[in-house]
Length: 137
Image (cartoon, helix red, strand yellow):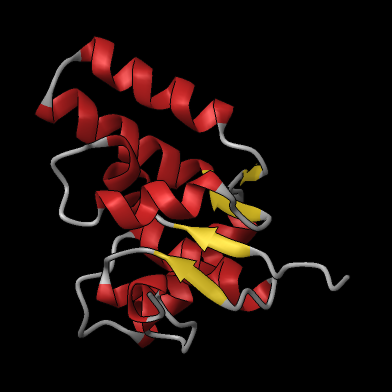
């Protein structure tokens, strides 16, 4: 049996999965039920935590962190100076786009790891050619 290809998980996918009122909730609920190997970054987790903290409250933000910890198989990759420098180059390359540093780190990681699918609703996450899962389902 062939090994399933790793997918990158962006903040938007985690929010859609956790928030039942999100228009993409059903899709991500289905995808997270039987996921391939998944990878994300600490910046994505921080963005999601902040989103739930601002939109709801500290308890809901902590529930979000617990949800991320429970997702298997999800590898959360740390972001160091090397990743930040590579992401900064991407931010300069796509200066006409409204990319966050977290987005740019994700784009860089997908390129470096040859990821073939991006779980996101953010069109910016397709800038380097990795297809967004919302266009595949």
